Image (cartoon, rainbow, N blue to C red; front, side, top):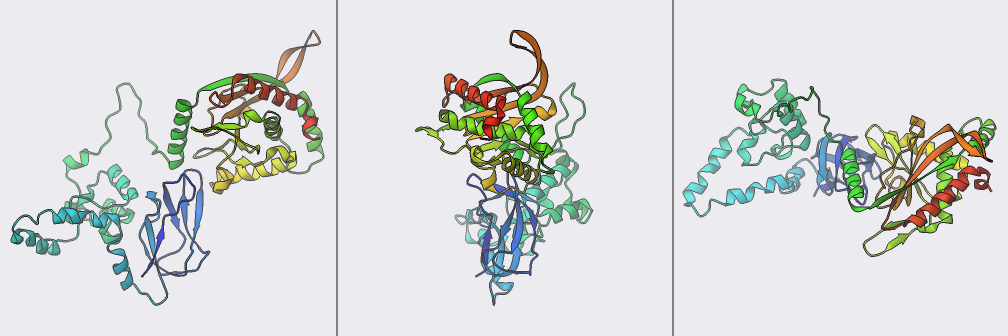
Length: 429
């Protein structure tokens, strides 16, 4: 029997993904460890390796399909000695859509036997449009979306995919005029899926469908604001000494220059060690106190925000943090992070200072208990030794889940963080 290749679960929370690309074609030999496909999850595009040896007999889910459920059959692998005839035996009962019409066909038996037998020959002589398979039309998610956008009636198209499934190529053929005119929906049907006219007063607009990443971001942020009672603590840090030390360090380095954000990551982790009660998250049965200071750092990507993690940041040097952060950020923007590089983390840092933002309050990254929002360093007037002076000040705001961290603990954490930032040499000892 052919081996079923299933949609893998690439993270503990993954329920579906997009099949971005097939790297093996039907008929090609496959060995264990070969990369056969690329799967797009909510955070990254990841490679899928084969675990068995054989020949790729049939691609069940075409490249570009979206919303493919975990453990759904995406391809069939022929073992040694098997040929294409094995695919029909293995594949016929497998796809859920093929089994769905069975109950509908079984419904008429209470009627006379002649009435039940009559439709069978008629169906056998019918062409093979999707409508002939029953009330349901079997099509890939991508094909359905393309048909909806183009105003095509899927019931009038012939499917070239497995078991008559309508795939992207069938929609392309229909749009190119490759189907008879009768296969195109009547004007009344074509008008049905058209978008509703814009509301009065709105200018013309275009709509960009949600990516999986954007959907997950939206769900998690709503969950965070709805379930975690946020409160905020803001203070200003004098970073003149930090900037001076950074300049001295970078003058001795030809590459991998240290950034202000590297100091912030280090200081936030050291402060968690000094105030361990702030390194916590909420569960329904207990407050979870973490022993490691794993700092998630917000990185903007074309698809949305992702938070790669600097593990045990308190024990790493500034140069190590700098190198790791540059590598993680670059691969995050290319959707090449591994799940273990962005899943987890005990505390988050979000820095918008490079955009000139003076101060902001970030949304907590669930299930963590706090996130530090860092603004731009700017020269401001301050009072020093009872006299007016100018200093480079940086505003930082801690967003805290009040279920986990009380105000006094949050204030103690911010005091520890401020002391480290204003005395940066203490981070190097």
